[in-house]
Image 1 (cartoon, rainbow, N blue to C red):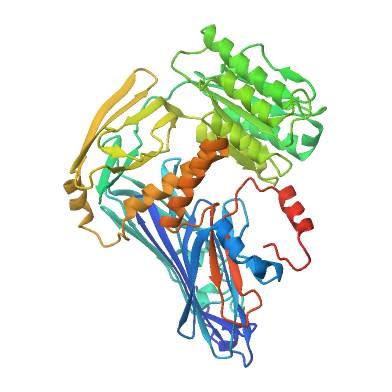
Image 2: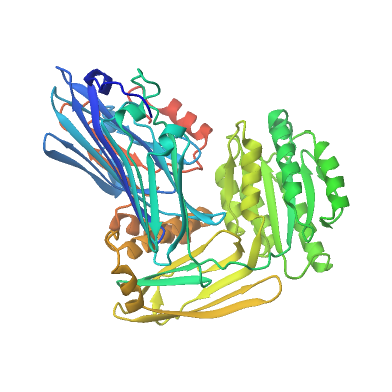
Length: 615
């Protein structure tokens, strides 16, 4: 950037506070990311000032540590069971002396905010640590870093170090705020197993214009990479734990049978139904000729396009486009009738051999409201749907906007080997719908099982999967019963388009140890922490669909691991104690969940006493 403006101290001070250093330091080892955000500020005023530490982190991440250091004294965050933390600070809550630190702030992020009063001339250092397992989508792992310092920072830096035992095949970094001038500030390199990215703009490069004191740094910084794949899988063993990555390539695509079940009730009218039509038309362009499909619409009544699933021939696709363009809204929400019709149609297609025997059957349901015609009790709907599907098909539930009962949609999807996704009401809702379809549009394998010797291994994460999709990855982790065991043999099976995929893979810990001796990026017992992260994530998922004693058991196990490994999850809270004299002396960080919709938040707000703060 060509700006040569002489730096003035006034440029760096906002409301008396200068943030003189901010660093985002990420270390990724075998897809597991350990991120530390450090911010250092000084009070340049002549009176006490409030300093804010305000960062956004991915929803998929777990906070593991936070501390504030003021004039050499460190105030750490302590992770406790959620209820215990709340009881401990009940009196402070009633006096209005606590504040929540974390809240959902966007589609992909949660905002962590803490503030502290410091004396004139005093310095404060904030340090936040979070961890996550990077997921593979469309053939790449993606790490998302939100950049928003809100003011010019003398020493700003993002540094990412990646170590992948399989070797790195590609590495890229981009930012939504990156101008042509800033493009050259991103430094990236990779060789064999190591990758490195740094972004360290000068003060002048941070400016929005030559004489401006506003910062350009406001947006998303995204790192994407992939690894070399000479075999379908990779097995790593470290310190009595293992992780197994499975992502075969160059497989023929499986034909798929897709039923789109669309809510056309009155609340979908206007922009929502327009965007749904737009998305479905784009999806029809991507459906392959070997696929079978159909549409079911539900308002007060249930309407079907065709009596059965039909093949995606050019003629049928043209007819489907005409049908989609004619979709309009009417009536109420007979969700039960729509979804049961879809299941019956898939059953009939399989029983009548109308679809290939080796094919992936998927139900994609989109709704923006709650069932109010036919069976409207959500528990009853879940029971009937689970019994009807019998594990044969995958159900994906898309909730449009905030009027849906997201917990119901999520529970029903998880019970039927799928997942739920919220579609945010915005100008790009059609792209969100299409993007979700793209993720599940290329099934490569059915009924994948990764089997580990039960007499050698315990506490294995999920190891059977209904579908494996192109560009994704299956990750399984576990621990050895005997920490001194040297090797592991795994049997892998799955059904492909033409034949059964079956092979055995073996690894010993000496081979893994050799690979890891080459590098300096490892942080602690990373495979053990990866196992704990994945186990907690899956226990929390199982807990959504469970009831009674089973739910209690999942909760207890997830809580135990969250406390042991110091993860802030929906079951734990991090209590941050501030120096005396601060208004909100005790602050609590909780993990928000997607199921907390706008109505829940509003009801909490209206039930709060005037002294309580809900952040």
